[in-house]
Image (spheres, rainbow, N blue to C red):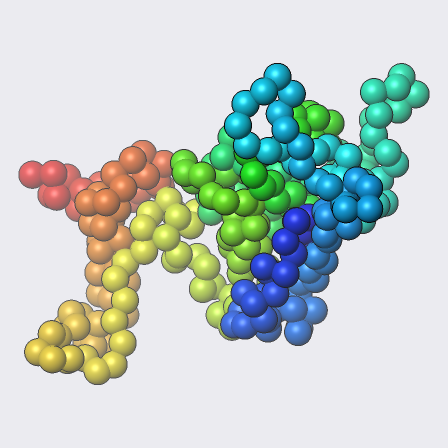
Length: 257
């Protein structure tokens, strides 16, 4: 999969992409990441990329021209325009997700990560300042994503969140091909069960005996019940979406009583 990232500060990405799973995925050719500087397409000799809001107000907005030029150049798209001859549907834009990272976008979830992982290429536009000119949203991006109900300085951190979450879903990236199935917010819509490793006893705190019992069926049931318990305690809203067996429902009924 290829990620095209459009940012005023592309160097912010290099450190995080140079370690751990993402670095191994890059080295193995599982992913390709292209960093594109919006500032290189800025206006005039000073490469200006922002201006005051029309109609007044505080803060600065990212101008449309540098963003359009950066994205169209990198993706090989014809220049979008309001002229009638340019209104024909462009198959490149309709099939390639061009994602604007914004607090106003749809909420990024594990299900959205799985959806994006089905594509061979993603384009991520990182906003800055007070936001971007509305014409970017209306005529260039075809998707908008938010990583949560809060405001960040820019879209670079959300872009890294998406890259990380999507990459680990790609075949061959993780050592265990089933590693993502039990993750919190996976298809089961449940939070993950507690994990323990050696030593079985640390400073007087013992791991649950069932985990060292060798009874795989009992371990599996304990983990399922702990996942249900943790979800019931911390995110009960997720239970409405979960696929629950009869045993799951009986366990939850016992919790409620």
